[in-house]
Structure formats: structure tokens, C-alpha cells
Length: 258
Ligand SMILES: Nc1ncnc2c1ncn2[C@@H]1O[C@H](COP(=O)(O)OP(=O)(O)OP(=O)(O)O)[C@@H](O)[C@H]1O
Ligand SMILES: [Mg+2]
Image (cartoon, rainbow, N blue to C red):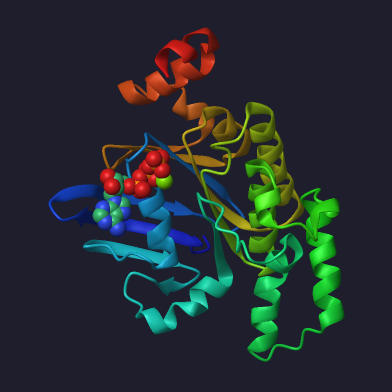
């Protein structure tokens, strides 16, 4: 069997005396979409930052795209970050640039590094990407003129502009209304279906997880409490997983539980 695109092998990470990841192991195959679920503060964003090499484990190994990123010095990590892009929890668009310039940014960077990309090609690609995320009309607006949901879509378009092999999405549907959450979820699904891109989606949204996941990693107190298909998740006896499933299926309870 082919090597997985991403592999966590017995990863431990603490901040000071606070353990965050404890013996975390899972893998993501090429072209697969893995969803990382868990409560707020459990270490989901920390997990993604290990994939990008922004954080290094205290013990264990992280492999991405054939590299051991947990060992790579910062100056070599650009190799990985060319192949793997992250859509940050905050969106993190450049406020001083227009939407179109934000999406063009990774392409301009590549042109600046000497890749043969013409200005016409950049313009055409930006148009195509904004079309893909259904935001053709907002190219010349500033990010501050957009709703949070639209900013998410722009951030996704910008991540795609780098032609990545893999995209990491950090909480793509939080802070937007339920209908926009469905729209952003549909967009991620569309991107998955039309390309062979490998993806990791971090969320605490069970509906999104069910819609997207080939496999789910469920973190409880820094440990992998479950790793498998959404269907198998339902038969997990882990109380916190049962709690997530119960609240997801009982909408009348959700308000009281929030
Ligand atoms: N650079 C850091 N220094 C110290 N502590 C950190 C650092 N990064 C994360 N932590 C801590 O690690 C824990 C996990 O953080 P993380 O951001 O991964 O949570 P999360 O699962 O993404 O939560 P949320 O769903 O709210 O985004 C938190 O307690 C956080 O305070
Ligand atoms: Mg987070």
C-alpha cells in the first residue's frame, strides 16, 4: 500500500506543564479527507500546526508529503508549505489588499521566485478561483466589506491559488450562520470531488463531519479516542463521542446545552 500523505506517529506535545497531545497517531491517505473532531481546547489547531511545521512535537514523529516535518529545520519547511496550505481559523486575509489581490498573492509570490507565470495568467486564475467559490462580483472589494462567510470563501480561494496537494481547514464553519455554514461545507465538498486534493478539516460541527469525512479522528483530552469512518463513530462507546452524537441528533436540546 502507498505511504500515507500525512502520518502522526505517537505524537506528544505539552505547553509548559499542560499536556495537549498525548500519544496521537493517525494517517491521511493521498486524496482522502480526514475530519478532526473534538471539544474546544482539545488540541485540534495544535494538530494542524504540527502538519505545517509551525509546532514541533516533544516526542513522536509527523510525516507530510514524504518529509519528516517534525525534524525539518525552519528553512527547509517552505518545501512542505508549497504543497500544503492552511485556511486559518481567523481567515487571516490581508486587509490592505482587495479580494482579487488576496487570491492573487500566492501566484505573485511564485512569479517573484522566478516561476514563469504572466500577469494575464494570474488574472485569469483569480477569475477562475473566485468563480469556483461563487464570488465573482467581489473582486475589487476590501475584505472588510465582506461577511465572515464570504471571507472564508476568499481564504479558501487563496489557499487553492497555491495549487496545493493538500489543504488544511481550521473550523471552516464557525462564526457563520447555519445556512452559510452549509454553503461553506458544500464548497469544501465540491473541491474534494473535483480534484484529487488531500484535506484535513478541523471542526466541532458533527453535521459537517458527516458530510465531508472519509475518516474521522476524534480527540478527547489530547488522545485519539476514535479513528475510523463516520458510520463506525456511531457505535463508539466513548461517553464524550456519544454526547456529540446525541446533541447533533437532538436539535431541541441544543439551545439549552449551549
Ligand atoms: N503556542 C501555545 N502556547 C501555549 N499554549 C498553547 C499554544 N497553542 C495552543 N496552546 C494551548 O493548547 C490547547 C489546545 O489548543 P488548540 O488551539 O489546539 O485548541 P482547539 O482544539 O483548536 O480549540 P478550538 O476548538 O477552541 O479552536 C489550549 O489549551 C491552548 O491554550
Ligand atoms: Mg482551534
